[in-house]
Length: 268
Ligand SMILES: Nc1nc2c(ncn2[C@@H]2O[C@H](COP(=O)(O)OP(=O)(O)OP(=O)(O)O)[C@@H](O)[C@H]2O)c(=O)[nH]1
Ligand SMILES: [Mg+2]
Image 1: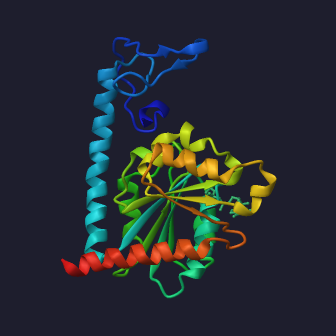
Image 2 (image 1 turned 30 degrees about the vertical axis):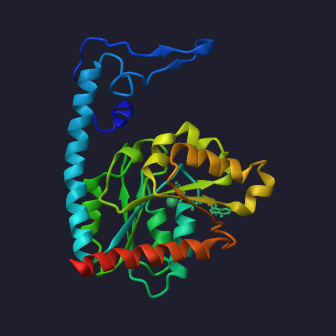
């Protein structure tokens, strides 16, 4: 997981080498076959697992606290995950306009700049930007702080736009109700197979930029087949945040999910 990019690991400890990578056909090499699922030079598989467990168990405590706050409000939180530029912010801006009357707020994650939070605030919705610096994902602790700056109404929708990255955000629970994977047709239909963890972790995938499909030599049915190969349960909607195509179904999905969450809270 994310100890590879050094964003959280305490990489100082050097231990015996554990070589787990397997050579496959044609001399191709896979570094993910060991118990840790990855390799870092100079670090044993045991140490890697120890670091990952320590980081993720701390994260999980923050995420659980966030989830408790959200549950008490009957607020639905969605973690929007994707590669950079799939259209998360564009989609959010259009979604917010369509959700008129629905209380909502946005947390924006990026390495640098408050550009995306500014775009959200321009719609009139409250937004907090979180800059991660060298970090490559949002974590539970960051989201808890951001929530302190948003006075979420009961039954609100909280959209969390994660850092554009198809790898690391898959591992970090933020306390959300569901991950929403955004894919755009320009990325190619093979992405679910190449970056499976993100799509295994997501409840729904939005295939965005359908307006560009005719120019992209892409087969949307194969895109969907590949998504279901890594996650047979995943829901899929085809949308264009630009033209609005398919956006009614997405907004209906959101309204139903938000209603179900606040009903669950009312029943407690
Ligand atoms: N044609 C077309 N362009 C789109 C669509 N959605 C977004 N875009 C464009 O795609 C580019 C990236 O959109 P953003 O909304 O900034 O993407 P993002 O996922 O928020 O990007 P990061 O936050 O940087 O990861 C912009 O130029 C958008 O105008 C769409 O449905 N169709
Ligand atoms: Mg964005």
